[in-house]
Picture 1 (cartoon, helix red, strand yellow):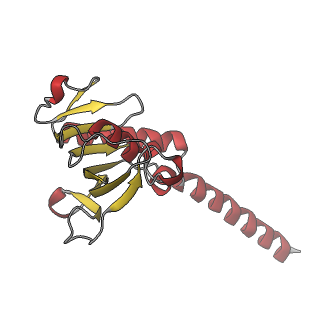
Picture 2 (cartoon, rainbow, N blue to C red):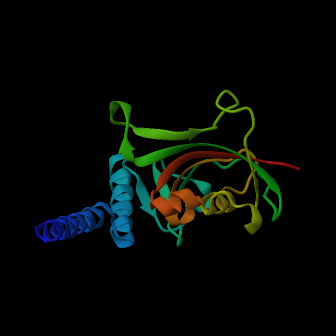
Length: 186
């Protein structure tokens, strides 16, 4: 009888400790969103980014001026690309980018590069994105950035919140910074 009581007590204590460990190890979605917002705000502060709520007039962007879209994408246009080459719905867009974690710091206190396909030395072929197509969206933030960039050979820097990222980023509730450039196909 004493063995049964001891076993039952051991199992009960083990179960309580297991539940306590699980509940402290997992964060709620609300907590993850708050952490994402804080990481983004810290990144913006650390990089001396100025956030504006409208696209700069005449595409004259200040050094570190980022436009914040209503969906939460931050974008800074480095190069407007070739005039009179606007992207069309259904057009194939070739994208090259560096995906950089903004919440984890790596070597020399710099954010870690998660994926680098910015040049042919990094990867022979760029990603192919069908513009304004729901069937081929690797990242909603890319679609939105392309709609603002619009032109062949335009270059931008973007901050993509998790809800606009790919499925893995959304599930992990992680924002990313991208160096992003596009080429339009004919």
